[in-house]
Image (tube, rainbow, N blue to C red; front, side):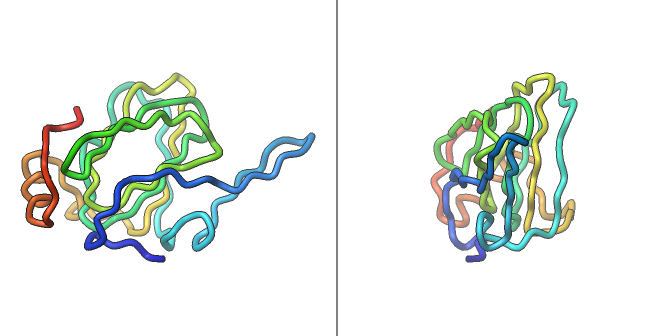
Length: 148
């Protein structure tokens, strides 16, 4: 399944495959098995000392995984905002296009792994909340206040 901006779906948890034995835990993430999109870009956030995100992607799907430590993700698809505690390596948070996202409250050892279905393009970002709500409303989504 390939997700697109024309399919307004809410963010959701995806359980990740894990194999554990006396040597440790191996967590795998596979396109088409764990991730409902083809991965084009991978990056991670570490040593965060403040908020990250505070933007939306017009066409990009992302999967966020807390590979170390803990942090909080606040999201809005134009309507009500929801907070997610990122505190497990066993699941990832799937963010569809047109999801406003704010990452915050990072523990000192937090590392956020991000898998995306598109390469970086600054023009694909919406960095202004008012612009985001206008575009969300144009797509037929109810809008509300910022999740900040």
